[in-house]
Image 1 (cartoon, rainbow over the protein chains, first blue to last red):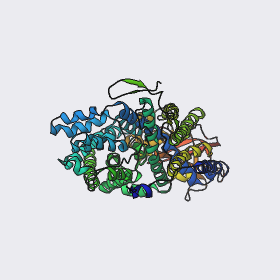
Image 2: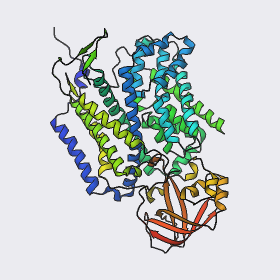
Image 3: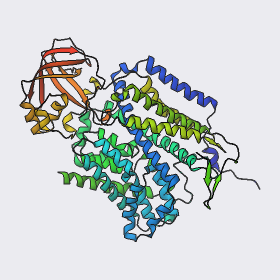
Image 4: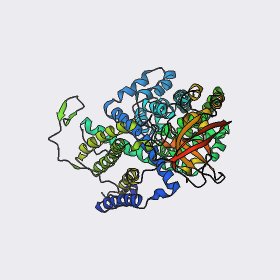
Length: 340
Length: 253
């Protein structure tokens, strides 16, 4: 019987790297080193400014990405999936808050939380609770809270940011779970969802835990690091070229400022373990707009939309975006009003 | 590290007798990226260059990252020998190369700081919401952080106003704008609470300057008499000396 090749596998198969590719990458890195050391691009003020801001963002945020990857690898390798299943034995009204709070105990990034939520649904956890967990974990986990504390330390808004992020993040995640309601896993999940957060695990047989741990650690770091690189580039470009007067103009309008920061968070696609540092750098914006950035970004951004599309059925992403945006906006504005 | 595994029945078995392993291209490339970043953090720590990127209150992340990344590099390399290695996609290798570019930039680009170019693009210190103490401003040696902090509250402004006529000594860089008179310049210093991305600027107007003596971004030490006038702070210079850039070019609030 003739086998019919899956066209996706032929068209979508990536070209493997060969020796020439490796040499080209190495040569490019050497060329960059030569250009920056001999060419002295720092003589251009804007280049110098860009380099300093770009470098500082990465140097500050990357250690927290590393900590996040470390926590995610620990959870992935050493925490049994049954730990999550205990949520299902709670009374239904408590499942959503409990799922949100479970994020405290499972410090995983927003990219890692998507496949975990899918696995939880497949294991029988109420889908709305799994979605709540998926959205809450990247906001509520200890690494994120710690990085938010470090980023805002010394400011009068420190506890508004740390506490507000925690509480508003939980409320928004529960709100999305509540809207998902009683939809079944078959209504939410794609029949054969592809693993969008590909780990390139080459462990086709039982492997030692330490091997699995380091493979996950390295791959999570590389996966999240590339988005941080993109976000740092955009943030540094904005800060280099955009006069503060433009941002100040947006920042002075209550609703617009929150929407602008939410949109910025979605566009930058930063990892939740490092996004507080970027948010803190937009000093023109008030606490409401900052909270909008810190709560909405880990739930909806460009890379997450791609992950959602690969995992869930059509319509799910729209629901998450709309409900999360509305709940974040209202919550952030309410915090602004409460603070006077 | 023993290469044992736990089976579904809970029994531990040794995996040493398994099929031969070969190097995984993705594992090796990943270890290279991790190692490059680990090397950068060690370099920043030992050279003291972290002061050009971070404030003194957050520079602890540098040694922590150096240790974690080094451990991750060793672990990733040790786990990179696998039974069935997948080919590494060319696109993936280019992305990994891209992730090393920042390391190259920091290591090979000349050491630099934010300068006059950003002075009019950064927010003033007053909008940052940092906690300030009018007691600190009202007593002891005045610093540029005190001067900047005074703008954040009416109490701070009043505390600084009481110190009019006192002699001060500030170190900062020269910032000259289009509308700056020839016998004046702005003495500026960036205030960083976390990393340079959140830098705000603290400035005083220095008068009684010999025209043309100093250029934009020259680091100088100004000694003179301070006159806070509302939100503007003027220093009537009695002496101005060019100095080398400080080891910690940014101030911490």
